[in-house]
Length: 343
Image (tube, rainbow, N blue to C red; front, side):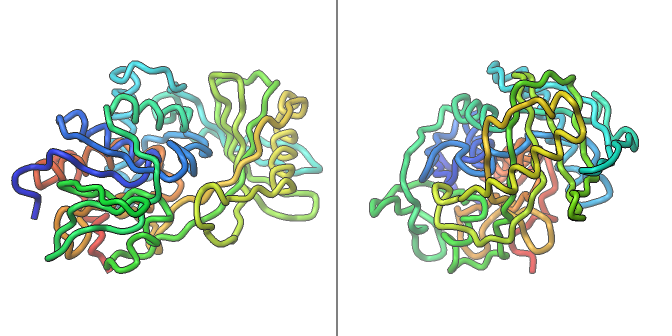
């Protein structure tokens, strides 16, 4: 059941893009929000993703309505927030490339009507700023409450009271909520590089790529309005560390990504690596995010497990969860497919 009366103060645990979106849409409803983050705003996957957005790539799956609503909201937010975070429409293409061989154009995947991009860290920070939320740095240690109701969280040994709590800590959510009946959320590690010194049009590329030693990769190459080029596509089964501060970067994996980009474009062959990065995306066993009430705990909510589509689906998640928290039901989207109570 929703809190009665509607919440005046909500604690959102996690200042990644999902937590930031929830805070923003709660703030639009006049709800006071405290964002609690251990390391920093957009410190994990939300600051190291590509920021690629697609209208219809999730069609014919439970994610389809969430993706379409979120894609439209992204366009609205770019006008509404009034902060430049690199939103623009892009063309998107599929290529085939070999480290020792030719590049083939396999076709178009999206047009400026169906694909777009944002700078993920800048978008997340813009949401936080526009939300009016208070950002509190610290480690969330436990959910507080009794008699089946959350009353706040414990942060670095101190109680932080609230009318409702949202758990949006990406792959670290499950570690906080071990005693809660939530589906498992795992961390999937991936590497990326940011290149500078190349001038490319507003076109994103998804590449079927084979290295000289026969490895099959699928790099994504996303030029940004600031002149940098983001490249990702190396997965790693490494275990999730204790915090985002402890994520390590493999220079060899990043070098492979840079070579893949160089194979695709002569301009990228002359570019230099500006940043080498790694992050853990939150994934669930069924590939669907958790968005809704924590089973058996009143006034506790969860939003995580968005996998590769967190940046795209943050606005739809944020507005729907804000409606659920403030009104007792989500009006914008049907959240049943993402119910944390599912088996």
